[in-house]
Length: 298
Ligand SMILES: NC(=O)c1ccc[n+]([C@@H]2O[C@H](COP(=O)([O-])OP(=O)(O)OC[C@H]3O[C@@H](n4cnc5c(N)ncnc54)[C@H](OP(=O)(O)O)[C@@H]3O)[C@@H](O)[C@H]2O)c1
Image 1 (spheres, rainbow, N blue to C red):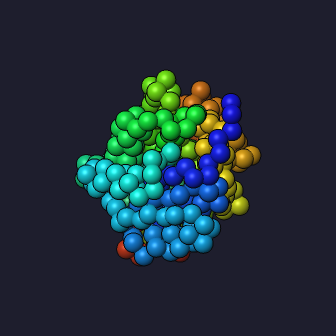
Image 2: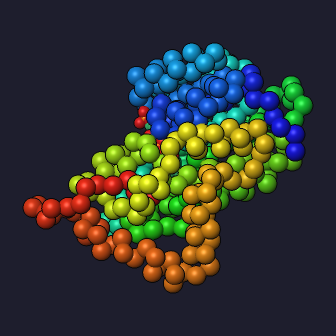
Image 3: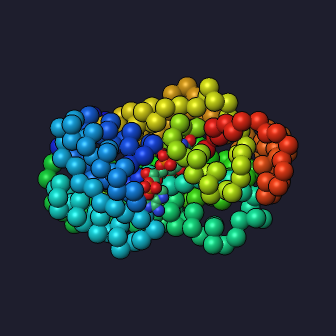
């Protein structure tokens, strides 16, 4: 498969103002890709945009809530107009929730699906329409769609049922789209980070109304967002169905395959999480001294 030269090929990224999205944006800028960045916090968008402009690429930013389908369509349309035909779209915006399923009401469940799953579809659909409508100006694929899913797309753990369901939905839809769109010249890949050092777990804490969240991966096992970003750019250059990162990603991927084959083993390896204090419902009014919060697996 020929290696794609990404220079001058624009990419739109949701959640491009923080963590993995910002790292992907800067890695794409280093590869010469003009950027369209959308997220809700405009000040953070401006900061990443300024860093990318320093790398010599044009940048378009727009304050955007991915739950709003019309706003996403407008974001893609404006980005296309500002930067030229988009080559890639990376649906990255998302958040985590640590809560037992029986304590997750429909409103919370709908909100996480609206952001993580429908928020992805809201930017990918209009991009597909434009990619298919436009002339194929260069040889090679018409475009490349990316969805930042998670390792938890493959196997859930207790307290992350709702989050994992959104990530599995992204993964399944992405796999189907990959096969459906391949004959039309559009590539589709899903990205499966393991625990990555970003603001993700701060948001998990806020969303989960808990003082502590359950640690199910040691801190040393976590990775930098730049690792995910570099593998993502490698995937844009040389297409692959799924992006996993390095030895740690391969280890988790293998473990999840084994656990999928052997569900009783999965029960055994993950059930300890529900014995942790944070898993017993609301935090007690006067809790016993707790271990310091640690990064969690996502
Ligand atoms: N960190 C991990 O360990 C990990 C592991 C596996 C998968 N992931 C996935 O990686 C993706 C990025 O997460 P991260 O780790 O980089 O966390 P992060 O630093 O908290 O970034 C989350 C991004 O999503 C944006 N976002 C959230 N809700 C949004 C909405 N309604 N509309 C528009 N933008 C929204 C946020 O921007 P605004 O708040 O400004 O809108 C922010 O840019 C997520 O999909 C997450 O599920 C993360």
